[in-house]
Image 1 (cartoon, rainbow, N blue to C red):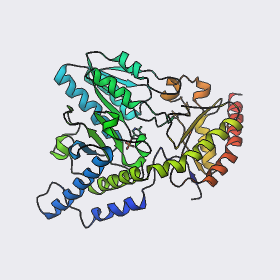
Image 2: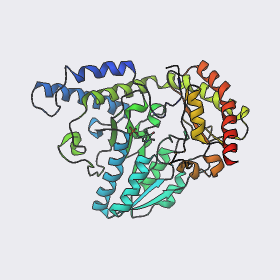
Image 3: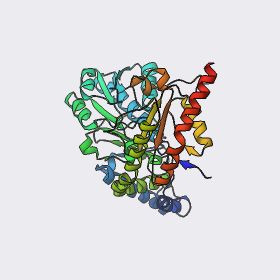
Image 4: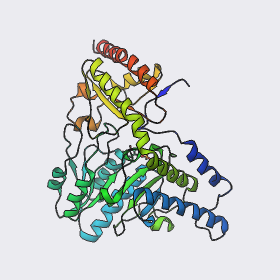
Length: 389
Ligand SMILES: *Cc1c(COP(=O)(O)O)cnc(C)c1O
């Protein structure tokens, strides 16, 4: 495939070193970690060693790490588990979250409201997609069980002031969860300096496998399991652990922390080149999110009077794999919630484009991309005009 991949926020390829670490656990070392015999002991040793590795990357204790099946499951466990436990403990029934969360958080919050009797307060964002700590503070009262605000936004790359939000929450005795699934690839995930009670990450956003995640649960945080059954994962997540994937996630996270500076140094100049060139060469274009407080591998734009999905198709045909915020709903595209939340009108919000870089992005790829994009945006505009008549 002679395609250029510019969608690392959607997923990343598994690092060959990670794959090497995983392989023996599919075959030679295949035991069930809960078994008493040596096969079991060997598998248990593998996940406990992975747990130590993850704990040291997050700067927490090993018994504060819960392995899950993905970032989405970690978000589900955090929200549902903490909401139910806090209501039982204190009677609190409010959940405070932002209008820019990943669906793994927002749909879980909606479900808790609709079927479980909780009440959700949705925090506004500023025009750059940031959640302001003083807005969080205003939303809190003595019936608030939990606040959930993402560390970095997957669609527009904005980084939230997690440390300050955590401080606000703790001053009011409210639990704080952060979805760090997108952030973990580039930002420090030291849970002590972040001050979070609960933090979600997922393996496939930082060169680990898909289908495995972590929830950090600070010691003493009340949590009711979403998935019941055996006593695995400290009684918080039933089910025989996926040993090879857990080993892979741990190795991928270790490498990410170790190589963070080099990875940032590689992607950031390329990102800046994209942002500068797009805003300069494409009329009626704007950056979504902002230049500061932005993931270093993330460029996102809105183009006026462009159908984002059409633009993606044109880009794909020209061999570039990118992403857009608008989900195509049976021929009637809608701007994403995030575009609404940052105040973009429909004519801008439909034309969103996200370019996210990674280890294999080269300056030659970016040169080719920047050479091609302006004419494709132009073409998408012409086609939209024809359609409107
Ligand atoms: C990808 C992503 C998720 C979901 O993670 P999965 O492992 O794919 O379930 C959740 N939140 C954010 C911010 C993400 O980018």
